[in-house]
Amino acid sequence: MADKSRSIAVPSDRKNFGTSIFELRWPIEILVEEVRRLLDSDPPKFANWSEECERLLEEAFRSQEPAVEFRAESDKGEWLAALVEHAQRLPRATKPKPYFSQRGRERVEPSRLSLGETARRVRDLISDLERRGYLVQALGQNCVDTGEQFGTLGSAPWDELHRRLGRNDLLPIERWWSEYVLDDLCDVIEIIHDVIARPARAYFHNYGACGWHYQDFRTGVAQRLYRALVNEILGESNLGVALGEGGRCEEVAGGDELEPLIANARADGNSGGAQHDDFLDALDLFRRRRATETEKRAAIVTLAGVLEERRDLIRENFLQKDDRALFEIANKFNLHHRKVDQHNKYDVELYFQWIFYWYVSTIRLTDKILERQAVSGL
Image 1: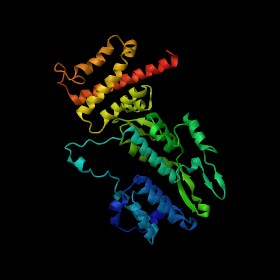
Image 2: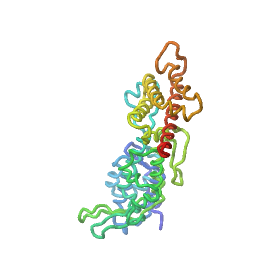
Image 3: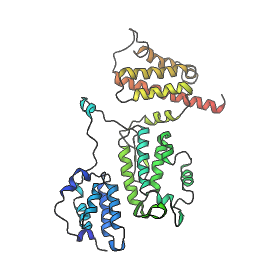
Image 4: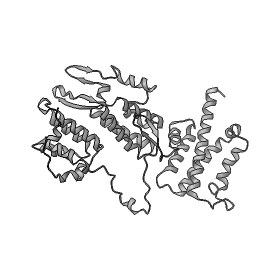
């Protein structure tokens, strides 16, 4: 079939394509690919062609205005061809301008998403894609006329996903996202990549308020789009992972290498009772954005208190006198009792970070020892 995008006369200038209403949500190359597919289709045989074009524009741009402008065009093919022609002028998505308090600081540290914030953003993304039919090929759909239509995962799709994951407490993401550790989030990101597919066509079934039905699924374009959108989120996080071309999460430079340690500590209750609550409070206090020196010192002292309660455990399982070194830091370096003979001439920001993570790592090690003792009945 001839390439209609080349046969249509394209206006030489489309100034509005460079305005903010055309800010992209999708990568340009994926938008252009999908627009060309629609231009190459045969509208007379494709009754819902205009509706599918509008749906594409609603997905690809952050604003609904491009779809509204397209709907008002008399020659819709010409408008789409012009969009392809001027695609490089489309504005990329930008972050909001800094607000008053951010502008007032001499040095603005970029905020990095925590594990919980990242999981919430991924949840919102997957929920949006599911709403647009991207999981229908895998999960199936229901129709008031034809009944349940099974997808590629069969008659019990969630059971099949759980079987592949080896556990049943990860999906659906709306239920479990707040309990994810890093491994959980990566597993969910990867398995959704395996089953996602963009419906090229859709129609609305009015009878009995049946709703949208999706057809002609395209896996490749959906996976490329999904990787781009997921990596946009992961790139703003401190997790140090990205979704690779093969649909598997990979370690990348620039993340907080200790985030997995923190994430798993939050999910693990081995510290027990109030002691574990103190531990989590210290994590939140030290890593809080704009935490003061006083707050960081208080967090370290709290961790030292948790270790103090485990002094016997440390003495029994660590090398001789190692427990003394742990507590001497808190007692001699102007952290705990604040005596005149304590050391205080050191880089607070640098050494507080080191002491904090050393204590967190030690507490996590004692958690594992306690877990092993509980299993063995010691």
